[in-house]
Image 1 (tube, rainbow, N blue to C red):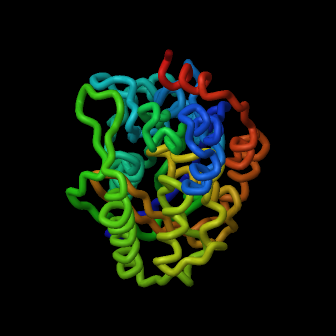
Image 2 (cartoon, one colour):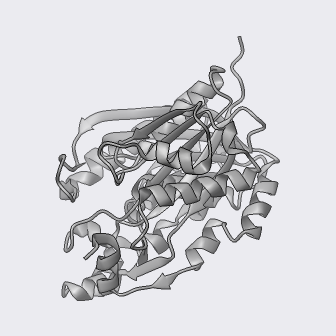
Length: 351
């Protein structure tokens, strides 16, 4: 039996209102602001409100996705939430979101954890379920709040956002042509149970971790799909800082023009599980029917999921809906309120 066409039916995004400038964080710790901003390439990062967590952020993104595609909550037959900041160790984020959306009871729910690629693992799982005919549509969500210890290097980049993708077989606005993964036991970043903040291995996170895995998944997808970078309209990568996605794109043979539309990191930082997904959403917001989009996520520990999408005619209606409601990624980036470092600590650390 021929596999069904599967892809993105609709998508939604949510970026919290608040921002803190990296220069303010640097000043608080008596660091040189110019050096910090210059080394990371990020101006400011998004910060959750004091009453926001991964559940509320995931819910906002999910509501946006349903509105964009004029879909009903009861159409959802699987709901996976990927996050590093689930509010509960025992009590799923996915069922809270499903309850608040009004999905009902007949759906598969699961919380996923794999550092920053937890949500793309969910996308693959839903694609498999839909292609096999077990479900018609499922919702994959990536949502995170800033998790970083004060005065740690991560404090300058860890951000907050949520992205939701309704994936299924009903007239996708972006067809999933191919996907693959590359995984290994490379513990460049970790957080033990009961420990509040993650630990990282400094420069070890670069070559043997991020670059090895993203390049590994990307090259495998090129071979599997019989494509080369020149065949692709847009590329998207996980964005732990502003330099890594630019560097890996260059190494793989992509141009700056192919990457440019996805670079949300420069203005809001790295929202962990939502990072690559937000870059994909920003790209879909400007994509044209027929465009080919390549995406590779990354999760510490370590792994990378790579995807190839082809944009369909339905993207035009989604873009109009999102623009009308002020939900395009660039609109949400621009809609902001800056707070100082003390305000940031109050919001994220509840001091």
